[in-house]
Amino acid sequence: AYNFCAGPAALPEAVLQQAQAELVNYHGKGLSVMEMSHRSADYVAIAEQAEQDLRDLLAIPSNYKVLFLQGGASQQFAMIPMNLLRGKSSADYVNTGMWSDKAIKEAKKFCQVNVVASDESNHFRAVPAFESWQLNSDAAYLHYTPNETIHGVQYDFIPEVDVPLVADFSSIILAEPLDVSKFGLIYAGAQKNIGPAGLVVVIVREDLLGDVLKGTPTMLDYKIHADNASMYNTPSTYAWYLSGLVFKWLKAEGGLSAMAEVNRRKAAKLYAAIDASEFYANPVAKPNRSMMNVPFTLANPALDKVFLKEAEANGLLNLAGHRSVGGMRASIYNAVPEAAVDTLVSFMTDFAKRHG
Ligand code: PLP
Image 1 (spheres, rainbow, N blue to C red):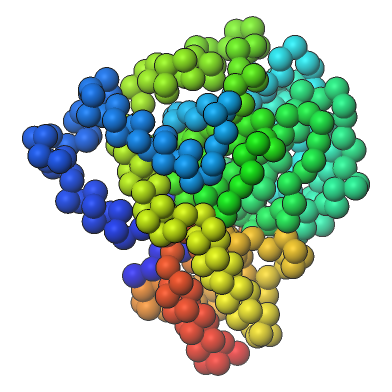
Image 2 (cartoon, protein in one colour; image 1 turned 30 degrees about the vertical axis):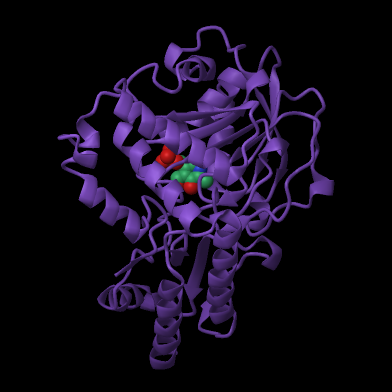
């Protein structure tokens, strides 16, 4: 079967097979990675290798810390203002969908939030033109969501701003090469393109650390985690290990340029199938169509249930759109092979013929 879930999402089959082979007796050590002390030499080696492989994949500059934390991307919505306001009282946010909206709501608990641009009145179908953004030079940082997982809206540019740039890369990290040096902080929940749920990866420029809001809990202070190599407390050890296997797999596949090539092809095939038929529609402005999350509707919503049932019977799983928007959504992350998209496109074409 092919899994089009938005998250927790498909993992590369080769990674799952390797994990299965290593599950009970890791490299002949007589125990599972799940049972290892996070302080043991064996586990520390696994953790350090995972970080190094991620650094290699994204060419992360040495003045950035890579943190493997818990609490999901949602906890970052609070940690970001707590850590990055650094004496300032406001931050700039762009609203391009439900995830940026959630980040905005959480930040409002800590500071004045300037929504510098919003596509809400357009039902989140495009990224507002950069020239229209009302940026503030005294903002502590600018936060945006490069890929809106629910609305399927992706930025086709990296904002050039004078304040630290903060981005929620949850559903687009590792899909293509990225210039990390343009950012103050990047974060991503693991359960899409990184690994299993239970982990969030934070990549943060060192000079932004160490000036937290008064009262910030120890566990929500990036510097504490940076100073302790993400082992201030017991980390999500098994998710970290599996993410490491994914990083190795990505390297073996040729790295992020190779991934990007396949990802672009997969997305192009799916959007072409949607556009070729009156039966399917995607409302997002073409330059902002997501490479990872492809929402689409059927001309007759009464057929939604039939579509999902038949898809499942054909081994095409988890195609229902987010509960807040309905319709369909195919998430085509790195681990979803091109053959999955080909199979989905044939199924869609055939379904439209039979029901259109
Ligand atoms: N941000 C984006 C863009 C997401 O897609 C998601 C989850 O789907 C989140 C944040 C929330 O992530 P988590 O469930 O890890 O808190």
